[in-house]
Image (tube, rainbow, N blue to C red):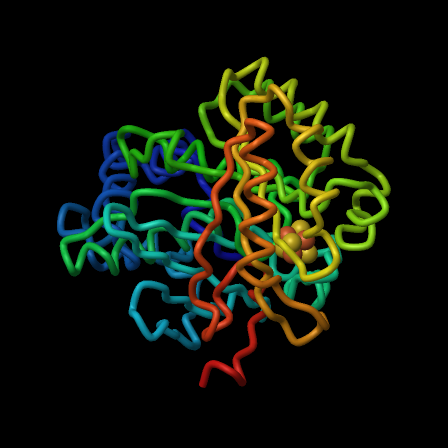
Length: 348
Ligand code: SF4
């Protein structure tokens, strides 16, 4: 019998399995609590279950789908990333960012990515496979358990690691719904952010879900020629359509959209681009995060000088667009935006 990943199950599915074992239904709630409140990663950890049930759990399910093969920490200790191997040999990276008042986890939703954004190390390595909802959840629980050992907790989860979340839509939404469960991990919907490169039909679908989850769009350019050269999916979903879908999301949810804009020296950092960006976003409930592009081996350019970043920001501010410059983090361990690409050789 092939073992299933226990985090892939809903509580209803787990209850069904428990009933099939001839056990009372409340056992499912006990197992659920062990997984999502105690972060057990082994049936042996349950002191409230019989030996027989623990044995059956062990025979039927995988509890530890992530094999950490390397961990790195930035010099200031505020950013850490772990390279995990999954079943079948696929690899992912997960990044923890510690701030003064929050701990944010950046999870992967695919091993590799098929979107091929030219500046992104994940895009440069191609696509391996989708992650299941349980494999996404397992990244969260792994880090929640680590943080608990220093009496800390995770405050935010961002779907900004390897992969395009909306290419693996159902698994991402299932993971959020399960982690949102008040009888389990109980992380509020507003603490999740999904970042997409702009898959228009999925943005609209996401708007219709009625969730309070945050939406971030990786925009990176204000004209279609430049954006298509950086983000190839722009040829299918050009800027105007992406912005239109975002307006629909705002209208449906009344939530602010974040636009991520990686400034690249001489490519998308001109005053003209800033003005065009301001025109696109005029009157929208949104915020722009500017970040100087992080270096990657496969892309022969990097972020502009500070004066250019400041000038870009000033133009947006003058156009009454809310914008901030984000600090780059974890660059020296390739844990910054666009740098994730399971470079184990660099990590050991
Ligand atoms: S930026 Fe995001 S969507 Fe583009 S290649 Fe990288 S991981 Fe994929």
